[in-house]
Amino acid sequence: MTHKPNRVLVVDDDRQARLKMARNLESEGYVVSSAEGGRQALDMLESESFDLMILDILMAEVDGFAVLSEVKANPALRETPVVMISAVDDAESMEKCRQMGALEYLIKPVSAEDLSACVSGVLAAK
Image 1 (spheres, rainbow, N blue to C red):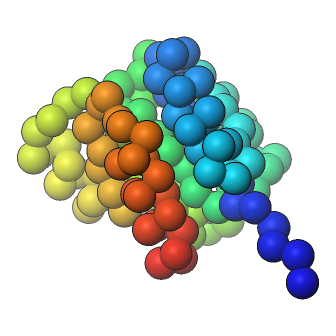
Image 2: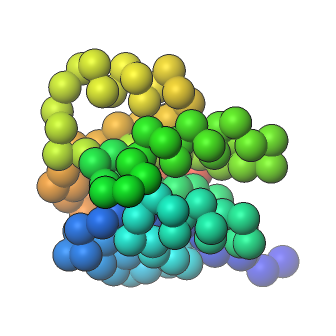
């Protein structure tokens, strides 16, 4: 039996942060796709299947809250685990994300170790 690698969608308008997370996850054996904004992420989710989405909150045009809301409102996508990331370290944003259905909330900059532990933990629980 062959093991199919987990597919992860990284959504962040910060190119450097997006590339760093993608490289870290790829080195762990994940298949990673990237989106530079919320609209692009939603378009990708319509045509591709992902095992996990890592979603930045503060983005121009369509922010992470709007993407999370659309994902959780869509019966075809609502079971997709979502990990929110943000430079905003406040309890109100964390609680709002959890109430909306996000499983984890990581503060930027996210270390490779924290990202790996979070992703493997969320996928193991899936």
